[in-house]
Image 1 (cartoon, rainbow, N blue to C red):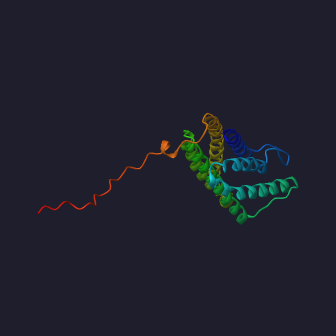
Image 2: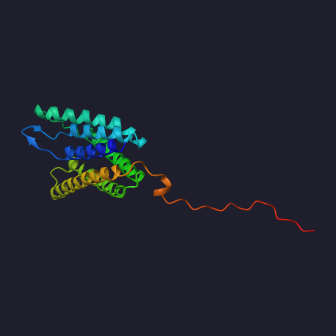
Image 3: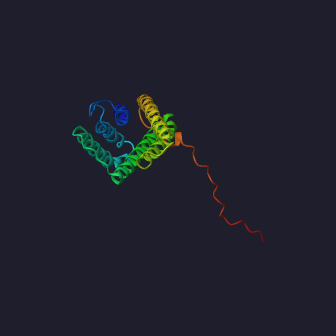
Length: 206
């Protein structure tokens, strides 16, 4: 199982890099988003064997493969899609997919007693905020004074993705060093015991 998780986490990290970095040869993107989501889908299948909630992400990942694949083909043909409402819907799907995926990976790290869980959750929060703010470019294109802000958000988002890929790689190594998930009681503080009230009636003296 640990070997499968090792491969899954590295595939997910690779997927994030494919989604956010682009190398174009003319109209051909040789790091297509659909391939990145395919890597993530493979990771989700393995992750779902340990974290059950990851199963819910499968249809969203498949949907993003289909959508980004369509965009990739249309770009090759020189056709552009200018549909702001549809773009907002796709953005909402991607935000949910990434937020829940990173949440599940954080849970996985906790289950194995790996310290990377907290780091992944922090990166998840920053990624969600920067990705959400970057959607403003759909409505603020051409507004003076905001160009540099949008560029800064894009750069910060890329830095978060790079750090995330590195942390996922480190987590994959940490998990392989552990044979099985540890019991919950070993990585969570036990709840304090509340003494039960004494319901026995006191002895009566005559």
